[in-house]
Length: 365
Image (cartoon, rainbow, N blue to C red):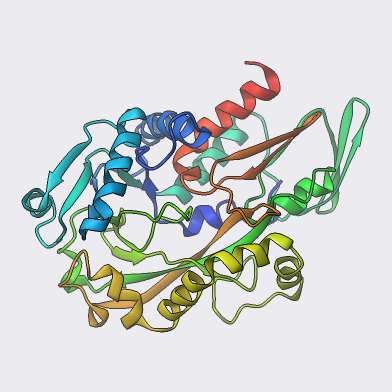
């Protein structure tokens, strides 16, 4: 049951297309487990259905000495998670891999890949139909009633009775889960991620992906360079608190969504901890020069004049009541209802493994 006219219209259709290798995630977490399994499943699925999948590789670059300790910790995580063919390299090694990149040291993950996630979503929908199921588009879920032995779902102009229900509603997952009787926590807080596209004459300066060492306080990876399967090179995304859950433009405002942000206690606790970062992100959103200042630390030859504003996505970031930005995947069970309450990056990479995990939990197979 899909509220839009086609699948993949929101997070799936607005992400960076990266298939992550498992560098960032705490060993033993759901993210670590399902990213590793998901990458393998996704590669096989793309090969089976002739969907673009390119292992162009990723560098995670430390540009100053203060980042080297964090790079050490990332390397430990990545090796614990079994990231294939991971290699630590120095400044000269960085230039061997990305001739126009700069830094003191880096982790190179050659099997980090890029793909076309909207094409994967469309193919999965076709698989459902070929298996005798149906994908009901233009069918927003407005009511869920849990009865003994069944669940009644009102979606669009139809009412269905089912034995099991899986809620995977992305940016609206908390609201749909609450229809089924789940708790208000965690609340989804939307963060808009804006991209810049590198002009074609400079796109050849980046061969694969170039990422910063992430700040461990945040579940965001920082502005980075990513090559798309189309050949376009993008810079981004940033992370700006959005004023609408589907707020792909800065001017998009939803009174309902704003009220949901403002009335959640966790919002204000988060703001007290991270207001300086929030102001810096807004500055980068408003000014291409400020946006590119961070990116130029990694590829100095690509500056504000070499990029144009491209698309944007909205990240469904779960926020606990105490102001904690939820990092790991979070899946709730309410009897016969399973709600995927938090699935940020690497959810696209992990998608087939998340499905496998949920099916095993629900059906025991």
